Length: 370
Image (cartoon, rainbow, N blue to C red; front, top):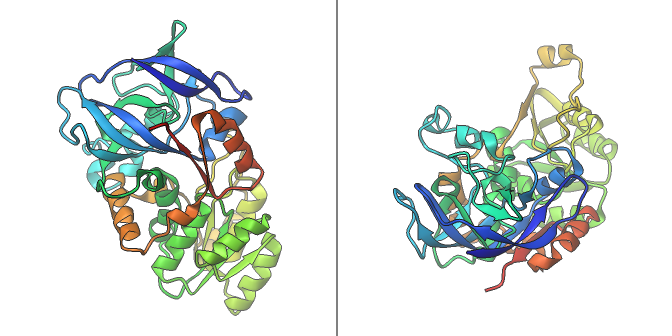
């Protein structure tokens, strides 16, 4: 069949809209008709060269939609099921899945290659194989993907909002609740209030943090963070540090979460310096693999027992936490509607990403044609 998609042909190039050929599902695969796709900063890392993929690549790794067809051996879903896609596939049987660490599933090792688990591609055009970002390619009307990349959700939930629980919401929420181990009464500082940072705010609030301090140079994002439960908001790390020292009586924050779009050494250093004894520093944002962004005296880590750790998908388990977060939303205890600043058509994908770069959006969402 044919499908319209937004494609990256190389580093530094904008998305191109083109029609591709799409193969149907093979063993263990499903055909999905996407309803919505989130505009996440991670796709910009592909165009900016921070995460060089195999080109050409159909963009998009936040997706929701309806299953249209299933291949042989599919047991997780049936045609007509509403699903949210997980940008980290989860097989359920590898070392990491079987020990409750689905975010580290071995199947996720090739997500930047864009191929399916059998090593082949389902998108084709002009004699080339096209990959799908994170094995998904949600910037396409339809895609053939692994059953291990989908999570069945309640069919009364709005898919154009549920889409955000495929990446940004659990990544941010989990960075506080799971990776940061935030507890009642803690002081938390969050650097960068985009689609992930705003959900780190939600996670810290849910975990019972006494003070949630955010740092972002964009006033709109600081104001939004306060609406989501942040207690203090500052334009610079230096201003935030002064307030943290005051709030903690000189002890420092309990947790610092780095969710800026592109991580640099200065923000990591500010985060490590902001936490006190026994403090946790969680690095969520991405940067070029050629950059060394963590430089800090080891003696401070030793004598003060500080911890620096990375967090992928918020250390959450997609099969459990995607449903869990949507149930919280359904109960009015998690904000999703308020996260969507603007919606776009597929043809407006480059406009949407320019708005992201310009700091106009907390999260933009592409709504596919019905």
